[in-house]
Length: 210
Image (cartoon, rainbow, N blue to C red; front, side, top):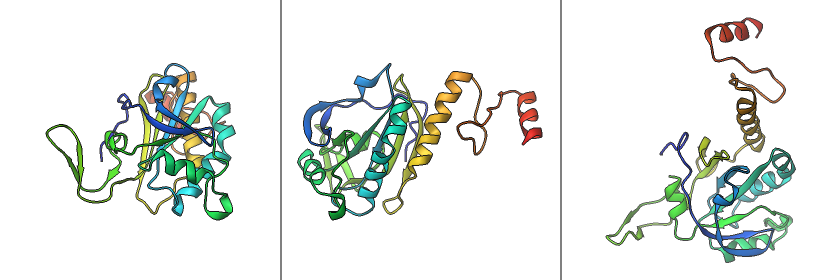
């Protein structure tokens, strides 16, 4: 699994469903450059089991991300038509009706491949086309991308392991804290805690108090 932290997030343009039902053909993260941090998270498949719990969990905390100026974007290898259909299905029936953040349709699998979260056996032919030998879906990858388009945090879970949305918020807080104050965030740091100066004396002072 590749590490993208410290590197520019791969760019792309792809179909997506936005605002719970509107299909756009050329969604890109470049619209947020210089303005917003982005949480881009991949999930395996529409109409499954762990996945709707995650999509609803991000929706329930969307206000927390928005007040921090962070955009939430989801992505799977399903089609935009599949996303749209799932968005029309009620939560009680296993659907994701009520989710309003963009859901990207990575039907050619190239976005998941670029972020190195694509599960399955595949290769590329001489024309650069992706050739699959089995079903290809995305691992549960999550990437925190800063305003300059650089990946600052990533985590990748196997298919049965759902993510913690509060931890994603904590990482946003940590990134914004370090950028505002120039201090680093020690173990188990959370919003409201003091940071640590990245010097020998700063470390010694912090450890002495904690």
